[in-house]
Length: 274
Image (cartoon, rainbow, N blue to C red; front, top):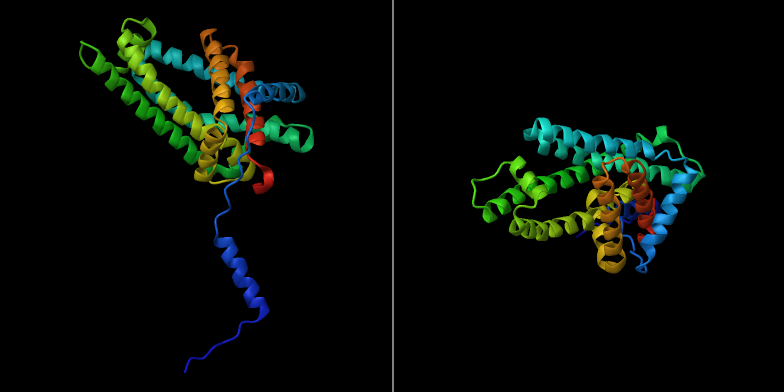
């Protein structure tokens, strides 16, 4: 004979609550946007810069100094260049969250504190750190692939990092440049897809890394026109800033950061926000 024990209503409620807590949060809904959405993101990003009195330019200055550091190390101790770039890839997501947080503060309270934005990453440190590691690993893989591509298209000995960088900037090996550019486009598309709204989502909703990355990829798949227009705009804005000697990054880096926050807010539905 089997003994059965009836559960009281309180126990039933507690059990159902525990089961609900064990379930992972649902994936957020991704909204469909027009191809002109990136222009609106830039407009709102500029409005954020004005409203926050250009506090985000502090982060832009940091990016400028990072660029100068890479150039100086390449000119003096080129062997350390890739290590320095790797370190900057680790720092990048944390610096960008400061810009996102300025927009987030303005959205929530109408004002923004630079001091508060400096430590905003601590709200979801583990997820942001894991994301930074993913980006750094992708950079390391791309650096190794570049060496292999150069070796396959070169008649000289296996190159150093300095040799590859010299060939890229000297334009002496068009076969390598075509091959390197094509494979680089694939890598860049991958990094863009996993990261376009991942960091803002981790900052805003304290999402885990994988959910934020999947949501970012879904944003690109759902809105291919808008997202590739946005990617092109980012490449042009940041690329011209680099060609102009890094200094324009003081303005353009925070502008893109503020605009990225609005891209996230427009793309990822708010019903899953916590």
